[in-house]
Length: 395
Length: 136
Image (cartoon, rainbow over all chains, first blue to last red; front, side, top):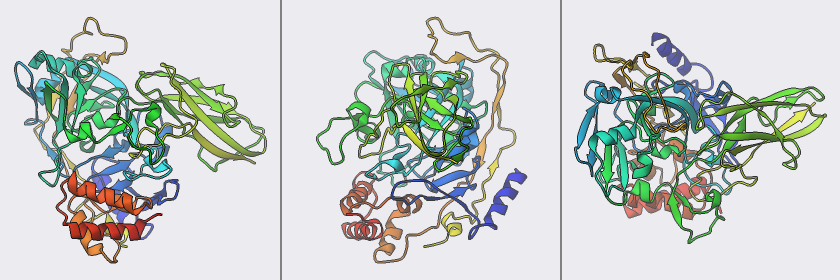
C-alpha cells in the first residue's frame, strides 16, 4: 500500500503540466484526449471518462495481455454519485423480498455458505464504443475499453430465490444496490430480469472476480452476473432482490437502456416511431490487440496477428481475417476455450507485400450470428459490433 | 479551462484502500455440494472445494473533481447547477451536437433525473453548451 501511495504521489508532480499522462482515443470529430488516471482506489491506470460518478475505461493494450482482464484494470461505470466508500463484511446483507413465501435477509456469511459456482463471462457496457458512432450521440464517449472478462465466483441466484420461495405468478426479479442518486426524488438505479431468466441457474451473485474479492468500484462485495447480457443488468453492491408479480415499471428497465427492436438495434439517424425494447443479449465482437491503426510491418515477412473475440450470448464459432476489404476471409486459430461467455484469444500470421494493408477481423458465434460489415446506429449509441478494421503499412 | 491537476481534485483524494482489522470473514468452500442434477454443460461449474476466499471489509476514498466549465456567458449557471450531481469531464468529452440535442440532454437531467434547475437557468445552460459544443 505504501508503495502504491508513493507511486500515486509521484504521478502528481511530474510530467505534462501537473503530471497526468494523457491518451487520445480515435473518436471521429473528437474530442479524443483523456487523462490516464491512477487516482482511483484499487484500480491501476485507467482512461478517465468521468471522475464523479466514476467512469473509467480500460486502456486497450490491456486486452493483449490475456483473456482475463485484471481486476485493477477492469472498466468502471456508475450512474449515481452517492456510492458507499466503506463496506463492512460483518454487517452487509441482502434482502430477498416481494412476491416470495419467506422474505429473507441474508448476511454475506450466509451467501458464502451456499453452493459455490464459477464461470467466465464478458461484462460489456451497452454503450461500449459509443464514441465511434456517426453521427455522434450523447453519452459516455467510450472507445472500445468499456468491456472486460473475468472468472466470476459466487452463488446461483436460483438457489437464493429458492430459499425465499418464489410465489406462483411471479413475473420479474428486480435488483438494486447501495448506490443512490444525489437528488432524493431521482429514480434509484434498479434493473430486472424475467423470472425464468433469473432462475435459469446461470445468473449468479458473485463475491469473487478472478479469484479475489471485487474492487469496490466494480461492485464489492456482491455483484449480479448475467452471462451473455449487457452490463447494465450486472447490478453492483447488490443488496436488494425483489420478486415482482407484475411488469417492472421502473425507469431504468422500462425507458432507459432500450434499443430499437430491429436487427442489430439498427435504425437510420432521425428515424422515429420505432418499437423500443430493453437491451438484452450481447452480440459477437472481435478485435486485433497486438497491432494498431498506423503500425508498419515488414513486407514479405510473416507477421503474427492476434486478438480477442467473444460470441456474446453463446460461444465463439470462428474468427476470420480479411486483407482484401472483406472479399475473402481466412480462418484464424482459436486459443483455449475458458467458457462460452468469455473472451477467446485468436491468432494467425500474415505476409504482405509493400504498401498499405487493411486488415478486418470477424467473429461468428455458435448461433451463426456474425459481426456486420456496416456499423449499426441508434440514438443511445448501444450495441456497436461492426467488423473492426485496422489500417497498416508494410514497408 | 482549469488544468488537469485541479480537474481531478487531488486534494485529499489519494487513493487508499484500508482494510479494517479483525472484521474479515473466512470463507470455507470445503463444504460445497456437487453439481445439481439437471445442470447443463453451460451452467456455472461448481467450484472445486478447498480454495478458501476471505472477504475483507473495505474503506476507500474516491477522488473528487474541482474542474469547472470554461468561463463564458452561462458558465456560472452550468457550474452552479450541474456539478452537484456529476463532474464536468463527461460533458466536456461530448462531441459537437446540435442545439436540439443539448436541449434534450438538459431537459432529461431536469425532468427525468430531477435536477433542480430553473427554466431560466436551463435555457442559459443549453445556450452555453451550444456555444461551447454546438453543431449544425
